[in-house]
Image 1 (spheres, rainbow, N blue to C red):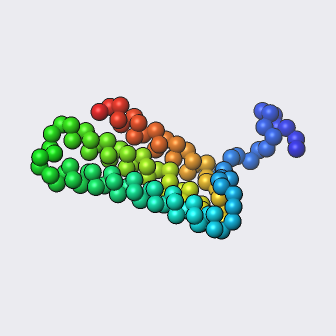
Image 2 (tube, helix red, strand yellow):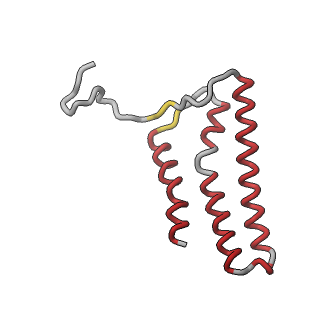
Image 3 (cartoon, rainbow, N blue to C red):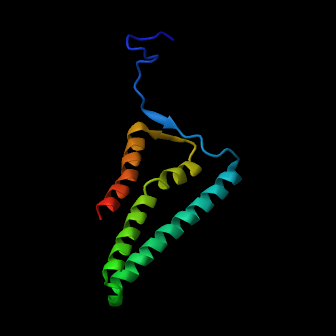
Length: 119
């Protein structure tokens, strides 16, 4: 390959990343998908349960539970940014993520941390 004027090896801009992940057959991929899906569902249901209980029970309307509800909401947001893409990749033959998608996931992953510092 020829080197271009700025030392770049290629003039084609970066558009996607290939995600290697876990190697294995169909059974291994199905087992990993089921395991990670179960963990994701338990996390989401736990946070939603916490938010619902704190919202509906009048005895839990104190400042401590207000912050606990906000923390559950931030955890729900944070845990819903990354896992959907790997779960989809377990079932797909295409294991790529676009550069824009990777950048969006990266900045959204940092957003809940920024919000929790402001509370």
